[in-house]
Amino acid sequence: MATKAKILMIEDEKDLAEIYSLQMKMSGIDVVIAQNGAEALDILSKQSFDLVLLDLLMPEVDGFEVLKKIKGDSKLKKNKVYAWSNLTQKKQIDLASKCGADGFLIKSEYTPSSLVAKVNELLKSKINK
Picture 1 (tube, rainbow, N blue to C red):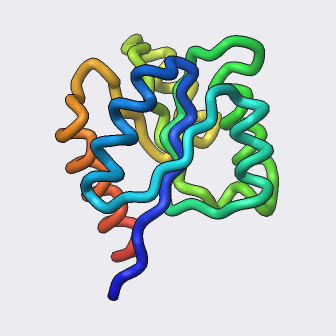
Picture 2 (tube, rainbow, N blue to C red):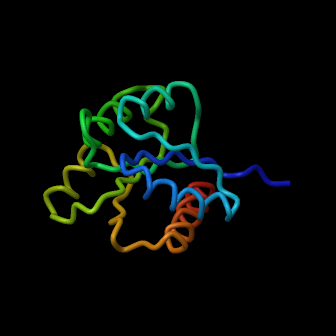
């Protein structure tokens, strides 16, 4: 039996995180939710993930700072991190890329089921690399 994929969703909007994570869990993906950047970094220091979805607009420590810390840490930088945001300006997308994001997903373009499909696609591409 194949091992379940495991992702970390860093999302400060609790209801949104629960809706998306429930859909992923129903599709066989293990999901851990962090509601802020500090919690996410703590979780990442203790667990490994196949994929990280990182909200960029969060209180206290924003996603750009979290991304810099992940990609600047020799133990954490192996994580595939996709920015997960409604920021759509080119400069913000470019900044996420410059900070080390492996890709950028615009929240408003995804329903829970289409996000599951995208996550599965990203996980397959990770396995094939």
